[in-house]
Length: 606
Image (cartoon, rainbow, N blue to C red; front, side, top):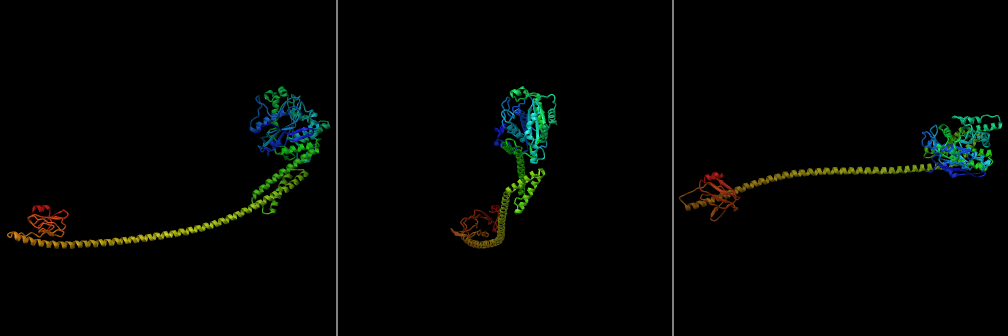
């Protein structure tokens, strides 16, 4: 952050030669923070080594507080120490040329609007090192730069002090008429009367104001009255403040501590600062009807300094010319700014451009008409108004190609945009068609898939039904086959049983015949007629000279083997009961009639 300090804006290089410090002007008044704000300029002028810089530091302290804390009360007490513009006592001058505080303050006026405040210190006048013409030039520049012009004088306000204004303000009305302004050339003139000799007589809150009004009142001397009339005609408002001596330490030791100043001096300084910079008294600098913005100050200072360098004798016409030229240029510049804003807004409202040159020309004409009406309502002087309007016309013609190019570019961009939209539309239509075709193909594919799926389901169902029918048929045939097999088996069993029975009967018959034969041969006196045997399963075999079957036939105990060789037959004598061991190892018991009986029955009758 740049340290707050005073920067030289106009250098006094020598007799009738002043140089503008352009870089410092741009730094101070071109700062984006304040550039577009209305500007209040408080300048101080007066004789050399009379404490002008010292008085400005009260304004620095007040503005520093109000910028940070707008609603806080400004208090000057024993702990306060003023800082700002450098000052010193003695005969050697401290300030050369013109110096501005490098920080432009931002405070609010009574309408709540932000306004910029700049403080300017000037070189002391009417000393042994500055000629009369240069003194007049410095005084004149201070008056032209300021909206609040503070004139620092000592002891009282006498005619010699008022004469300092004569060389400049006697032409004030002519300048005002020349620039066509509605009011006076200057705005506020403040008389700061230091070490006032009659302080007790003019004590009180408005003592200084009453004293100045008395001094500037009507006098009988025509020449002196003319000075007073010129001042009243040149300044909108005049203030007066009277001060006692600030104290020995201020005068001889250049102190900036409030505690080392005369309390009465501090009270009056506080009253002056709060009056001049109160919210209701904050009025932006004007030139004619044109209000200054902060960024306008740099150009105005350069034009004024050039004017005074070119006219060292301070020709009033030169001052008139520079003010007139600056005001016209300022009005034209602001009118063009307004015109360009309106044109930019018109293009914002018609982003696609104006289709024909006639429409564009009509829009330009409408915007020019609006700007012209604003000028006519504000500038009353017909000659000034005519010159401003003509300059605006020339400037509009100069910048007209810019809007032609802009409109052509917008039309071209719109055409490209429409072409792009059409391409996108065609591309989208193509994509939509392809998407529709793809969707149709998908639907057809899905339909085909569904048909195939349904056909597959149908075939599967038919196959399943066929398999079920075949299964049922197979089971039916299987059951029938099993039935036939069972029937055949039963038939085979029956036949086999019949065959076995036949064989057994045959064997029994043969055995019986053998037994009869044997019985006849062995015991002819005893005849045993056994009951018919109960033959088992299987075929009997002959061997060993005896009859072998699956059962025992005779009493006395004989045994034999069945057809399989695994069955044993036992027989016990008595009552015709038989015991047979089957091929599976089972025991079978039969009665005399060949019927099966229990083992117990067999045992009981054996």
